Image 1 (cartoon, rainbow, N blue to C red):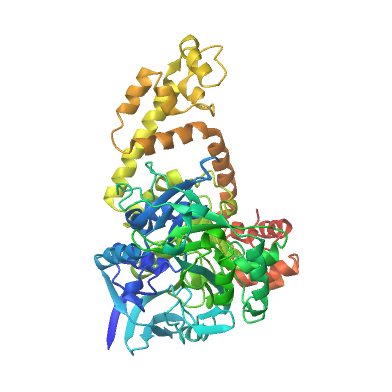
Image 2 (cartoon, one colour):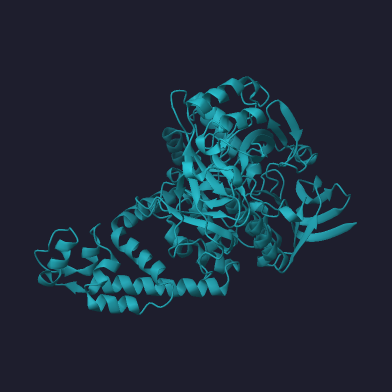
Length: 624
């Protein structure tokens, strides 16, 4: 049996779902091939979306016309805005979701997307002719011809699970691994390696002594993920709980280390440094008396709970014995133990910024196969791969986001320029221009670009224009409205800030950290009337306007720096130099430049091992 499509997407995880939806919504005839239609968008580890920097990525996916934010808003059972005590560049939304409802919400999206078909099967072979992808063959012997193929196989490529000394093949607990596909791709000259990740024990909530834990409630204000009008909190909102390990727990864990796959030589691959297993924590921090754990619900009605912070591949009996030393878990009953999983990934320096491979035309990689970790990082790559696969099929300029335009741009540039030596996780610290990449303005940065492509809907674009107009109106009012000292000083004193010596503009007053738009509007009738004129998304607009007023100087300075450095992005060098012959470059720089073959001077400057003096050499050779 044979089928023909524009785009084939292999794998229906977070990257695959976004990739398939994007290419289909742009007009490409798309087929999403998945092992199990009941596991579409499966949250393999924690059923949570967002977090530090990750939440910003989800907002960007939504602003581009993706679906992770919409699905999360529909299925959230707890929402929190992290880092509220810090500046708005650090604010990050996070939601705990109902794992099963998340899957069915994604299925509803995909099954009702025009141009998109779903096929349940496993891909075993890539079809390539003259350096260009032609399609795939599945284990059932079905041939899919396609102009573009997007690989988003997650942890399934030759996946191997570990619990103590027991090893079982699989891509996830109780799910088979994918064989032959890695080897089929490697035959085309694409190199691959092995990485490791893990997940913790799942707990029966009926066995937990919640009275020995500290409750952590969610928040219920206007914040959410999608910029569309989805409403807030569709499902019952549930708390999380926190507790700590102790020395008794650590002692039991230490006794199990000889049987730990991480320390007995069973696992050779590298795991995520920023999400370590509990055994790694006690080895790395031997003097630390306790480690915090978060007990989080898996769904609105289930008793299943996720123990965040206790990822482990130790033997089952060690995991259970250690946990029972925690007072809240003294009568613990579990659904299954934690486990580690090893899987194949491909060196992302073999990719262009579009996520197309350099060696095989029209073959794209997205998600964990590029050495990343996290649903959000996967989804961000998926939507970019889907967009560019459609462009490769139907024409147009490559769609690439800069480091000053999106966290997604930072993520992809880091991958293709620097590569990975451990599972890559996004942090705010990875972005040079994080004041420009705030969660509140992802739509202002990206929706216009996506709308011009034809991905972001007219509804999104109209909402953006309304929001932009309302924000500009508020800011203009604040800049033009004069405040008299004698009238406002009594208010300022009650708010704990210095009285005015003479009048000033309202915007100047709002620069003070103690003062807010809401606080001042209560005492300035004309300002309150201005706010009352906003009828739609009022809180979102007020928040955005206040950020732009208070942080105007910082935003302008960062934009100026970004614009200055962007000049280097305009100096194209790909194909201009024979790096091996440039003896004026350092040996390491020659080797790295030959391997990555950067597009621009700016990308070359970000390659580890290429020094400022090497960049100067390239600039001189460019005649700059």
